[in-house]
Amino acid sequence: MSDAWRLLDTGTQPAAYNMALERVILTARSRGLIPNTLHFLEFTPSALVGYHQSVPLEVEEDYCLHHGIEINRRVSGGGAIYVDEGVLGWELVACKDTPGIPGRLDDMYRLLCEGAVAGLARLGVAARFRPKNDIEVEGRKISGTGGAEAGNALIYHGTVLNDFDVETMIRCLRLPIAKLDDKQVQSFKERVVSLREVLGSLPSMPAIKQAMAVGFASVLGIRLEAGALTEQEKKLLEQELPLFQSGDWIWGTRQLQDSSLSTVDYKTPGGLIRVTLTLDRTRRRIRYAFITGDFFAYPERSILDLEAALKNASCEPGDLLQTVRGFFNAHQVRIPGITPDDFFYALQTAVYPTGRGREQSFKTAESSAGR
Amino acid sequence: MQLDKWLVPEDLHYDRKDYWVQPAAGEVVIGLTAYGQSVAGDVLYLELPPVGTLVRRGEVSGSIESGKWVGGLAPPVSGMVVEVNSDLEADPAGVNQDPYGAGWLIKVKLTDLSELDDLLSPGAYREWIEEQIRREREEAAVL
Image (cartoon, rainbow over all chains, first blue to last red; front, side, top):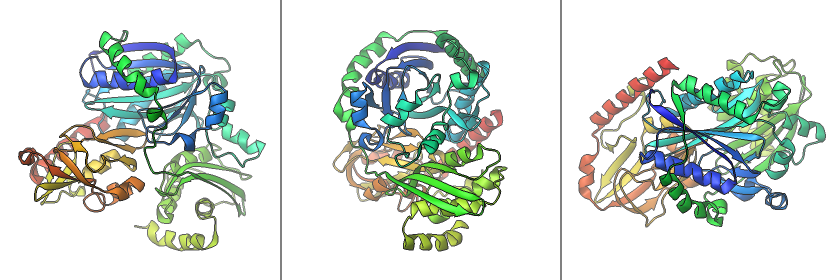
């Protein structure tokens, strides 16, 4: 990867502008109009859903309306996020056949996230990549990532939580915390962590960008040259912006989907496991798992890692049993008085909160787990 | 990772974007190959072009999401969509579980039969997969 990449910084912009610009740069790259690009962007308060998500299912629209939070839709996949002035966005836009960028998605995620990890390391943050595509510090998420492609070009982007407003996040997004008490809400907030919290003080935005740029450049083996949007990109942006400002784009119902919330308390000899799940019952998948309780897990972060492993996992009994057992087989976790299967039963109870389906699921899980 | 892990049925045509094509009397059924679905990973969302859409070879006419990645569906032949596997739009798991059966994507009435001649034979597609696996190995060695 010896050719220079463009380093582009478009500063703070409204949600529709930022989302439209992502598509514009991707399109421009796929048409060969621009070189590969590392783009930094900053946000006014915005709730951004993933490409296939439904706004009413993911966003508290009234709250956003009354608090000046713009709603928009990303070109990339994944879940809804809240971003504001305390978040730095980074994105890599490249030709798919750029030497060194893996074709298999999981390998590509790892490599590109390692670039962000190297940048964070330069700031003194010991972050790590967590499959499939999070960057975490002690199990707590500091950067979420996602991507998309168009023609022969790809975009892979993420955020760095500099000084994150978690209070606004939990109010403007529809998260699985409606029925939780204060202590559990606090525990939920601790699933994410900001640079300010890790470092004790916040480096300046230029210093953060500089560190991230050097991190990406070193891992990808590339040279960065500062550049600006080209005239062609500006023209494309003028053309795309009206769509990204339209209700069709923002609220367009793209998919049959549902989101149901289920919370259960499951008693074990080692203590209570409280599981809160948001489920997509149409697709039979766990959208989000939140696990608390009065048990002790060593290391403490293992429960956060288990939650990450459950994200988007199938909730079919056999699959779920495999996911849970697979997780505990792969990680050194000690939880006195609780077995991996207890977590499976707690999760299954949340998936099938009423009697019959539940018993059935216990019976079928064992027989189908070995498939 | 071995080639024999990925089924390449003898009675289908293929392209380098990992679609299979099954012709029958001017129409074709299109799906993702076993290798193609493995590269994408677990499919979470699928948006297929509605019946009546004119699709053009290689042009994006739908989307597929797996692991926070949104990819485009670009059919390997041109024509009009005459049937869509609507089961998949509710639950796209079939793409992973049964790529050559329940996981088929769309049925297209061809506008240009000669496009079929440009597709790969099973043997040529196997060679293409081998090439990709070699590339993956090299990349994995670098990581």
